[in-house]
Length: 224
Image 1 (cartoon, helix red, strand yellow):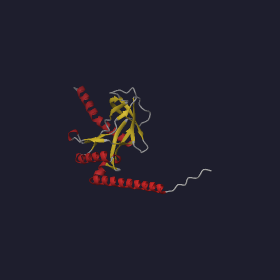
Image 2 (cartoon, rainbow, N blue to C red):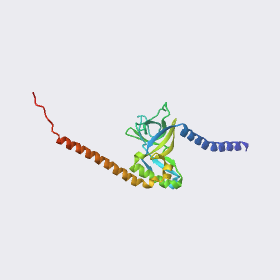
Image 3 (tube, helix red, strand yellow):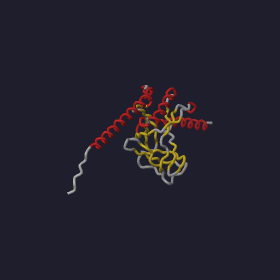
Image 4 (tube, rainbow, N blue to C red):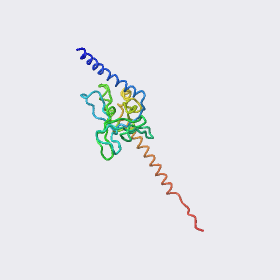
């Protein structure tokens, strides 16, 4: 009887300690991990029956080494481009010596690329009362203004966590609180008109330069 109590106590302790460990691990990654910006490519519709999460989509089809196979646990390298955004550049079997990589499961391999499952990067927790508006923001920006939305992640020794979703240089919840999204379509239309006017003015200047060249008289020197 005493042995059963000890086993039960140990089991209960493990059940309590695992969530605590996971919380501390996440805090460590978010505090000490390297920050990367990832472009968002879309979203999956919010499902209230699957929890208070926004399900995010980004580039998950990544070039891989020839020995990578379906079902493997791969090490996915991260690289930053000249604009400051990061992308997943390669999947390999060997653990890198640096810390800017993410462990991910290989779902499928085709044409030299691996389709990956990034378990900690495709779900963003949000309060249920903000979920609908957040979903609308993701839909509008990923479709009509993808250069103004991205997510930031922190990466440390293969572990990755979402830090936030950034909209027009604001954190998602701050952007929702600002009420700016009410004017989203008007702002987009205004930007499009300004861009069209700018392009029209540039074209008019080019036409004027062409007309000036056509009116100029060129004197060809006579051969001696």
